Length: 243
Image 1 (spheres, rainbow, N blue to C red):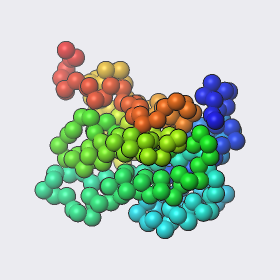
Image 2: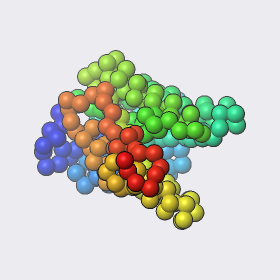
Image 3: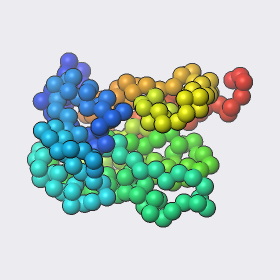
Image 4: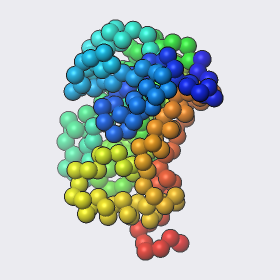
């Protein structure tokens, strides 16, 4: 069983990271390796290699095949997301289904095929998001899928005990995901986030990685959601000054 107070609590353990090729996922993989663990990155577009494997959350056969190829594991982290954002009146059914496949259906299938392969003390970490607790126009599907993740880890924690299931719920994180925005728009969004968040700043990849490591290594934590949002769910409304 993992000792979270050990110098390298993940040493010798294998962690499968679904959606771990960039941003927060890459940060988690780096942290696992820094602790002496083996990080295996998985995704639809991942080139297979010694520490990478193709896995498509919309394709159950690929999940089953990945489990057979990997053998025994210690932990599974799923950061997969497939957004269906926009006004409800403009949403496409296929996009809605893909969003649920990434956040809910896929993780259930991961548990179905990989939970039996986890060693004693094993766990799953799924990703939710702040919009589940702070609804916003145009983000109905994102909010609903993220909220469902919080419920899912509770249910799986009970049904598949003693394996542990937890979730991490980030807020606005400077992870590279916003880099496609025009620079001025990104800067304005980050400035507003920093101004309205209780902690007074935007999140960094290391903030989220630390929460994932806690969820992986704390053997007395299950069915929990770790909110790494700078208090984003309590963020003040846009104004020139905080109240």
